[in-house]
Length: 142
Image 1: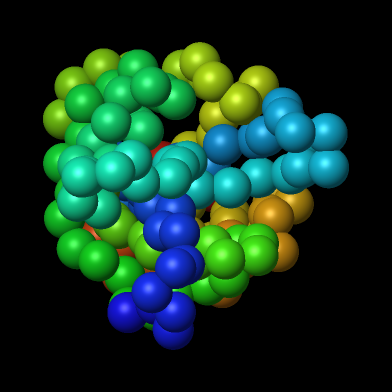
Image 2 (image 1 turned 180 degrees about the vertical axis):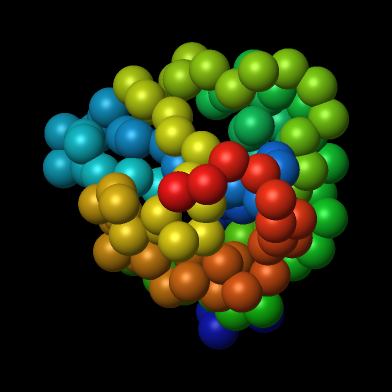
């Protein structure tokens, strides 16, 4: 749980599909533009973290997703804000960068270092990488 009652919770979705994690490149605000994150946003009053995650993924990516598991831990993302991450399964839709992002990438676990993550997201991404379902071997070589 948060250390202080007044901490604002920001939820992020570790959206996975076929053993890959979705990364979103920020287009705003300027200090974050060009860096990568797990998509999500702040809880609204009266929302549970799971409800906020579903809403944020719908608004930011145009998809329906199902929260699966809360990733242990919380990470500071600014004064009075903490990040909570949930693994989430894509139910319907094709993710598109609709809000605050200009590019999306599906990354296999061994490709996670290929993008420049926001520093506050990196510990969460490392934790998520240990939990993602793996794609069964036998696909395309690489």
